Length: 233
Ligand code: MN
Image (cartoon, rainbow, N blue to C red; front, side, top):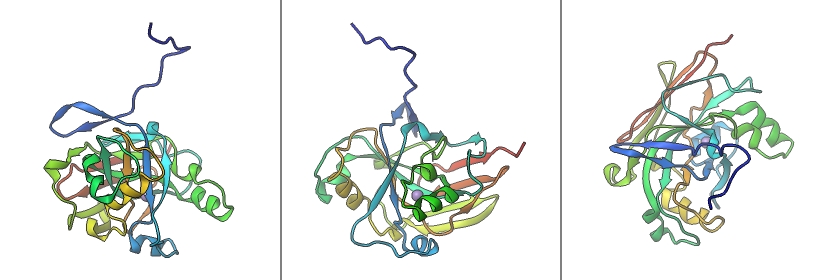
């Protein structure tokens, strides 16, 4: 007999897949901090080259590309962070880098929305980052492109336009921790599984997006990600 619930279970957060009618169901969302040296510098810190570090977002923070969202609650400084998102189609633990890419289902353009003012308070007071990073619509994502269609990660450009002006631009090869290293390292701390997403960090040029603002980001070979913030009032 199937389980009965007190109320309808929440919807399964999911992401569209290019060339495929079925959706990618989301399990966990991992995010890498400071994975581009120029972004670490603009945040006033040096990138830690000993090991990557992470924070997480709820799977229910997923926001599909093309959405118009209200300005996020509780902040006066909502920032955009354009990122490559890695979508896992298989799981594993304690993986070597040579095994890591076998887990990858595909890639997508994503925006890690950040309440920078709340993140700054958390940093100053040595509190958890959740209020700054994990909130409604904070994990914006475009359709996933299967890995075989994308090819090998290398010199692809990654960029973001805010209100029509280019503000972020780099190459995926600028990442301090490449994707196989991130997956292998994460797998020492979590049993990874199909449905996990990894936001791999943002290049320099992060900044505020206000009410009425528009974001459009791209990575060579992937579907673009777009977000509109509703006007004030
Ligand atoms: Mn980020």
